[in-house]
Length: 145
Image (cartoon, rainbow, N blue to C red; front, side, top):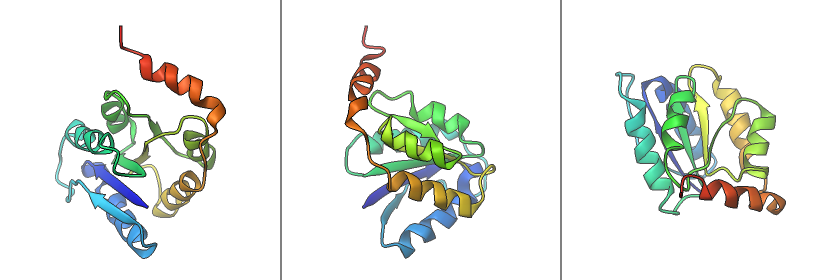
């Protein structure tokens, strides 16, 4: 499995924890930064992540900011990105099962490390249900006109 992760300063501490979490599980993770608590702009890191995910070389991406809201808005500006802000087990599973999310978004200031791990596991253990493909096709066409 290969994952790519990006964050702003509000997601730095959670990202640091998740890098160790993935390493302990033998999951390759590419870190796009930021790598400190110093204030940065989430759209910059959201763009880095979206462009990297769109290359198709990763199983999924993870975006983290303080609440997850801002960076979620940033990555979803890109055609082909389906980012889902997850905050409980149900949203984690449905992000994959119904929406085939290619980026999950976490709130670094709203989730504990343990909760973030549980959400990531739920997402990774879920499978996309093909019956929802029509909706994803429609979603992909939005903004083309």
